[in-house]
Image 1 (cartoon, rainbow, N blue to C red):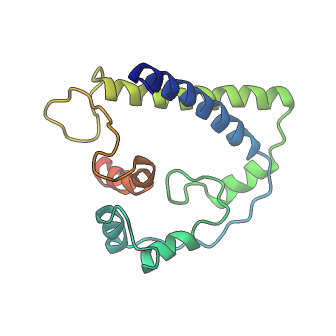
Image 2: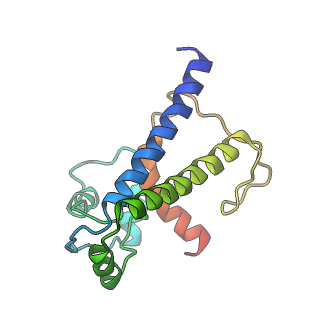
Length: 167
């Protein structure tokens, strides 16, 4: 695959991901939801996840992740963010087909904005706002940089973001 083919594939797949994510988000509205019991993560457990890019599947911290992986209305951020009342209200909401279509477009727009901002960071035309970086000139991802994979690091990196941003 040439560089241009790779670039085109990534951009096309980004649009597919946006469309699918928006549709999946709208499907959650009006669905009954039962709140699973969630276990909070300790600072030591979060530290373990940050430091171990390929964690031992039998490790107690990883097992806690699996226990917490039950049905969840939201998967981001990786902590409960809706109150029980918010969840109850969402489960009672019965949007019409037109309202669902409008909501899907709003969610798709939000997803697209996130990807666009990410691409701007990668291209170096936007600067990091939370991470402290002296000079930012963008970033290039190359295959097999260090054996780590972004999709594996994404969830764990939330805790770094939360700590740095103060949220």
